[in-house]
Image 1 (spheres, one colour):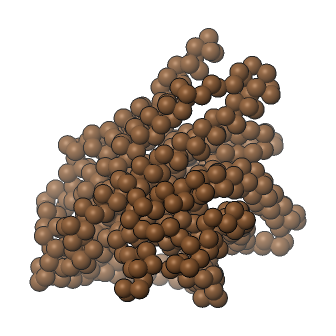
Image 2 (spheres, helix red, strand yellow):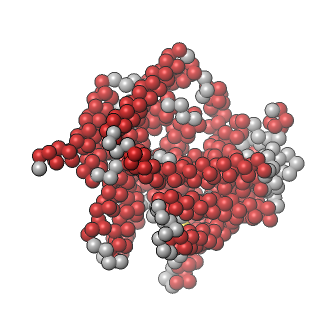
Image 3 (cartoon, chains in turn brown, blue):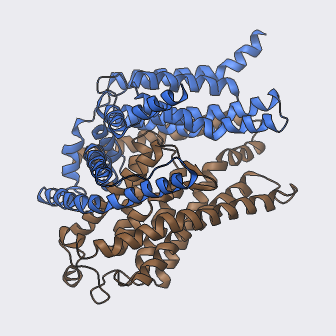
Length: 280
Length: 279
């Protein structure tokens, strides 16, 4: 722990990075949520527009705190504060943003190296955009039963999603992630770190883990969870309908049992939690 | 005439206006019947109305649920801007589909399935507006904490509402000072318009440089103040949680609210059957 602290990433500094990334990215997404997206031809200036903020912070500080902070900021500022909280569907965005920013931050060993920063600044958004495109395709596949049977549907879904991905990456990615990050990282390097009381990141004192197989494995797990969650939130009703088919005659009984079980669970949880707090 | 109209809209949508609306939404409605309810009961209520409509396909039942959530939203006195964003969101999700299907030779028969989808989306979003906008942020974060949500999430919610007005004001000041120092290009011709957009985007990106430095200073102050109070240890300590959550109290008012909601939903479910018997 002490060696870790000497390298410039104590728990409280991680919390500072979390708070910094959360408030800045939250503010940016809130503004972009309130102002309808501007469309210039086929170029859409949307939320990806502001992804340069967490990318810059993830390169300069602890990547995981910056990534989690950005995803939390988006959730709290633009979803909960505006009352647009969609439940499970938001988890997919949370995970893809976290993974994209985290990997981009890990790719940079030395923030002074412009080439490293440039490669990471375009790879991060690319990973995030690719993951959300795959999630969208899988969602359509799950929602439509005979996906392959409908003539032209698979091709059109792949084409539109692929085109949206390339469009976002080429225009939003380069204009609003790559260039601003290249502008901000060298300027902030060495200036913003003392404000949080830590040393600038160099290859020698880097405390962040390298981009290893473990990180990639965990990212893959997160991605799969995102797909599953997106499908459940989209196609939840079809699962229930399938269950109802074999229980058609006793459907009322099953509904009754279900309602009773849910109520019992809530009451039990309530009692347990109250007791826990009372005995503390 | 058109010029005047667009000028009028641009006047309204300034950063000041956005800030006022968000603040009003957060703190301006402490005395509504919804805000006085126990956050735990409201969160459970939200859970029901966020999940159940997706499983239903009956227009009458969905309509009844929609009316109930609309009433609660009215009771919560939500800021108009939030309702506008909600209406825009619902239209962009389902409304344009109807317009598109009309263009491709559809008729009124496409309206029925779209109505079901719209009702589902609208009910779920109105329920979330009622709970997340109608409640005081501190109450909301206490409620989430009680259910065992990570302390960081509930901290983020309380912190976000406090820091947002300050951040917005600061961003506006920085943007204005950039605008005073620079000179926006003429935007009469097409080339000028492109240059104008590039100039605006550049200004926004550049203004994040001072904003990041200022926010870094502020977040250090915040975290150091939290550390002084032993935040990281307090967050996981049951004794501290007990003191913090002792203000939560579910009593008769919550019971009435839950009963009225349950009775209303039961009526909605019974309504189609009752109609069948009568006719």
